[in-house]
Image 1 (cartoon, rainbow, N blue to C red):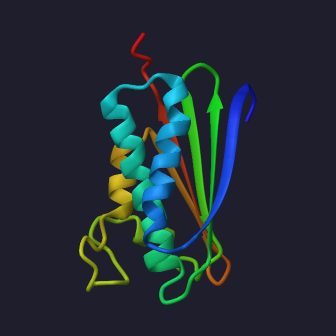
Image 2: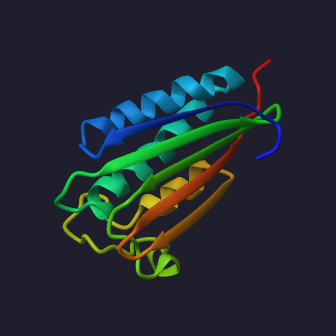
Amino acid sequence: MKNTSNYMKITIPGYSKNEGLARMCAAAFAAQLDPTVEEISDIKAAVSEAVTNCIVHGYRDTIGDIDMKMKIVGEDTLYIKITDKGIGIENVEQAMQPLFTTCPEGERAGLGFAVMESFTDKLRVKSTPGKGTSVTMIKQVQRRG
């Protein structure tokens, strides 16, 4: 992306306890844009859902790495990309439908992509069965100052 003023990348193992770590890293990185408390909450919720999807759906009963890349683009745009190398998604369009799930016993099954979409300005999901999934989220931040 052109006009990137800062960026970061972390790789975490797909343990459920690391979902909070990813959320806090995202909030700390986004803080340089001076977002509102609501915007920080939105970013944390979207990252939480994306990482949880990697853990629950991408890796199922195994542990694999989750990559999170973030960039500040221009004056007010936060770019977040979360990637796994898990089982992938057969039909992304179907998977993005609210309440669709491959894990019906899950607590909030079928809401992950809807939550990500509601808390960001743009959501893009790419997946290849057997190779993994990447979720890209764009959030425009209204600076408090």
